[in-house]
Length: 328
Image 1 (cartoon, rainbow, N blue to C red):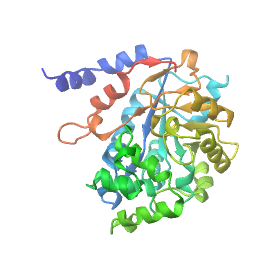
Image 2 (cartoon, rainbow, N blue to C red):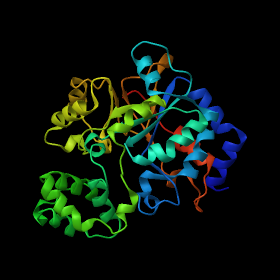
Image 3 (cartoon, rainbow, N blue to C red):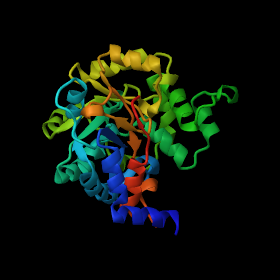
Image 4 (cartoon, rainbow, N blue to C red):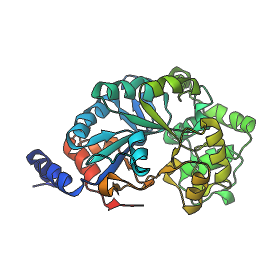
């Protein structure tokens, strides 16, 4: 019997769910999403496939979450950390990074229908700028065939300056170092003709009160949306993020999952008490009380569908449940 068949049989028999109930009672799983898009939309044709789920695929995840977890809010998690009410057994927090506009238009109605709360981590420079996000314009160009070295040179980089970082991160850091007007000129030739049809990529600050009234919790995701452990001044970036969000928001997820002890300390100095990483683990929560530094598991289409692109509940369950339990 193939591995896929064994997994499907184990899930259908209830064995995976039983193991989860027995082993993960005192845990918090944090699922990480980025974009949920209408498959017929302009954005769906060009969004990064690693970080994007079509709406029907996301919707198919929600009954699995309901079956195996108690879906909680960020407020519940923070209360449990602070000594308030403990989390229920097998708690699950749903988080969305960056602040994409399609969270409001596409993901949120599905969450409301399922009665599930969610948290959005906002990259504050991005949500302050309407229209296409320059980082998405650049990364789309890279995904769709532009040569990395040409993109690097377009921002004034030389071959000798190319770092060992993955190409997407290297380009983001290089373009972010440019003055805004110079960067805008460098990005302009990369804007595809159909980009305008996508509208505003990101949520705007003006939308936050209405979303909060609908039960959405918010956290910070840095200001520049750059890997903090590679930045020259992560503390300055965190200060700008704090200034944009105000003092009431006390959670932060580290962009690109890059962090170190200095970043953690800088975030806490800025009042971000609950910190989320991209360490793919289940968080220990003895007595329903997790630590204030938490791992998250990215939910990606390739991990939860079969060879034909069809949703597979057994794959999703295994993807989330077959992880180490850790306290970071």
